[in-house]
Length: 157
Image 1: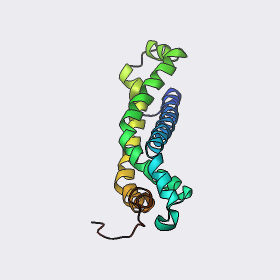
Image 2: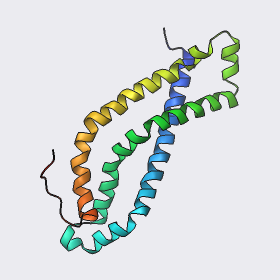
Image 3: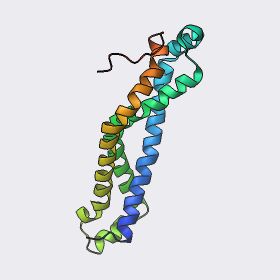
Image 4: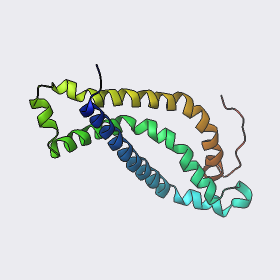
């Protein structure tokens, strides 16, 4: 059960599409969320002396929110990357010769399934470890804008 040249090509094509689709979707939803909350962020910056809110703090809030968006959209990214990979292989006429040479369809999908399993482990790690790291920083940046008071560490459980 070795990865041949075609398997590596499909694997890295899938990963490339997963990253590109992920960056597009995460940035799109971050921008849409920002546009939806621009009034509250503006109010927080206007009251900066009371709340401590700055434009850099707003940027930090959205950067610390990325792991949460990532875990939320990871299944959709995987499906879209798989579709894009198969379409690219079909468009470049690279899929048919492999199947005609006798390789089964499931065997041809194995690199994408392996990549999806690997990415599932990464998403699990982000959810279990990354959330614990990101949540205090995210709330520290969240509260000055959306609660109009400085953040303090209490009642975390």
